[in-house]
Length: 120
Image (tube, rainbow, N blue to C red; front, side, top):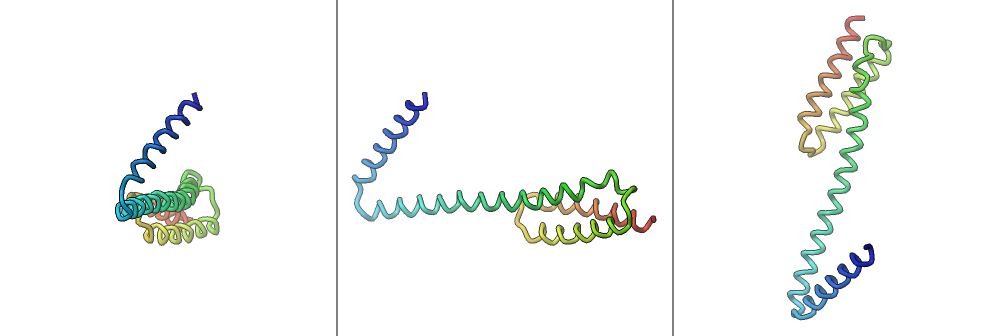
């Protein structure tokens, strides 16, 4: 089955190459530019998703402690508040589509930690 798919792919590539060779140099250059720009957009998306996952992991770690916030010592809660503030700055700097949602949820986690500090 794999060899069939590879053969179809080779035939398509060959047809595309023949199609490209039938045009003059200006059209070939234009097509090459289009393919290059497409490759840049595809690769830049990977970098955006990698950065997105970085702050999501930290977000999950910070907001994952809310259920045990009552048992944490004040020093640990203060560190969590500072980490929340730092992560808020990171999220504000991004152009993530759901950054308002993450900021809202992170602010709620921060406010809970701050409330626990004030209540102890």
